[in-house]
Image (cartoon, rainbow, N blue to C red; front, top):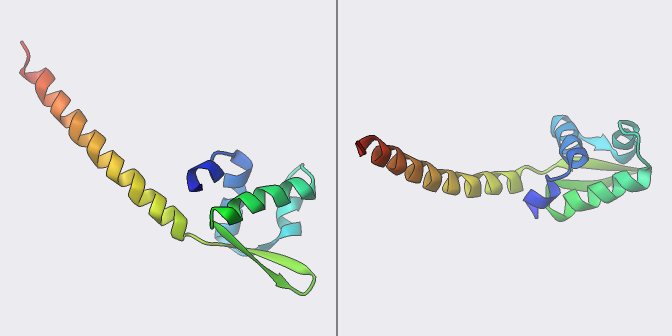
Length: 99
């Protein structure tokens, strides 16, 4: 779910913005040339991936970055990186051993 949510450039940009500080949904929407409904849909995807949380402060909905799923994704990527680097090292050694 994390990787799918990060596939969209707008969602990545929203995540970058809220990683810096908490923002209201209105503040996020003001940064884009898309409707508030479209921004809300992007936020729903990010919420489902647990990358952001929303809470109410009076009339505002405040969005906060939740980094834990990114840490889990980074660990997953690292495992595959280790496998690929090992395989590529073996390939390099094999190619160097060939006449």
